[in-house]
Image 1 (spheres, rainbow, N blue to C red):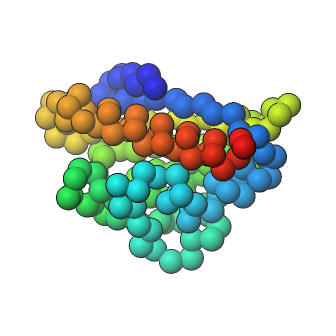
Image 2 (cartoon, rainbow, N blue to C red):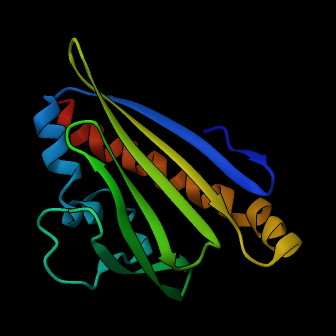
Length: 158
């Protein structure tokens, strides 16, 4: 995973091919409760909001998540934009980042779906945030998306 920085904003894109139909991919990823299935268990990820069966524009989803060992934080995201079977965007409203913008894009391929995650984020605390990025945030994000890739492969590419 290559993370770049521009104007104080970090960005990365992760692509994965999944052997399932576009409808199956959309149904899995548009159900917020499935996020726990693809998040490393040591993060202690818990959705704390109700009615999480199907996402919709404007939906607020609240979580508790471990950002460091023994340190959990509240995280609130809003589903800000949806084009069904194409993409959706979740944006942090409150949480550990100063800004978090995550686009989930789905492209039908000959043997399934290419899923493209594009994330833009800004850290709090200025240069201290940059130090934290180099000390542990970069490693944690790589671990999260590597775990996610592995779990999705297990679910859909058997």
